[in-house]
Image 1 (cartoon, rainbow, N blue to C red):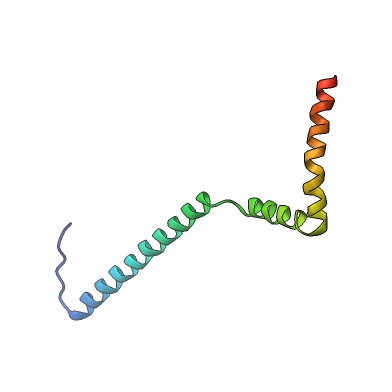
Image 2 (image 1 turned 120 degrees about the horizontal axis):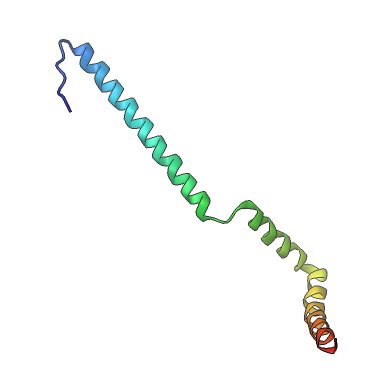
Length: 84
C-alpha cells in the first residue's frame, strides 16, 4: 500500500472519515453474515410452528385422549397389516 502525502489537516480529517466509514461498512457486513449463518443453523419458523401446534394439540383434555388413543391405533394398524 502506498503512503499518502497530505498537505493540510482537512485532507487528513477527510481520510480518517473515509476510513471510519469503511470500517463501519465492513463491521455491518460481518454482522449481516453472522446473522445469516445463525438463521441457517437454527430451525426455521415452520419447525417452531409445528412444535407449538404439537404442544397445543397434546395439552389439555384432547391431548390426554390423543395420548391414550395413539398407541391403540398404532397397534391396530400393525395388527391389520399382519392379517393381510
